[in-house]
Length: 191
Image: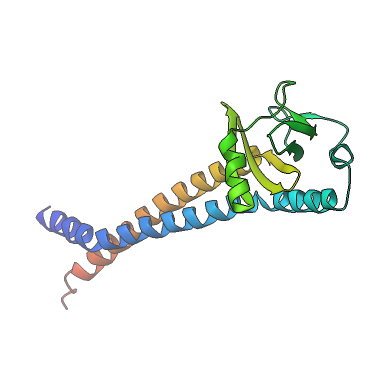
């Protein structure tokens, strides 16, 4: 019994650095993958605002740039486009929130004005989160967005997978060290 307790303590001491490394690597994998998911969620919107600003500069009508069928961002995963004037007043839109115009805080527009483009997560109400990109142009602002629901579902799956994988790795490394120590500690058979 004392031998088993001594082996467990020695195993634990040898396993702790490996456990810390496992937790660190699992965390790094999560952060890198989650950031890739989230930043990739902005790609279509960046293209949409850039194309819309270029079209407006060529004289396109704002109403011609937005889809005729309006979506409700609380219910749809579809991307949407909204065009505002320099006073942040709605000119044209392909989306609403429960039938109401989309109106991000004025700081969203101020940041886009200062930096040319503002890329952020916007939550106009609980349970409604969008990846939005706002780009300024001489006539105002163009906002493109899409729901983060599918990205957040992927993130949840990633969390579950890494949690299970991390626990399995911790258990298997502990077991491997313990079994190896037991095997090495056995007295050699006498002849």
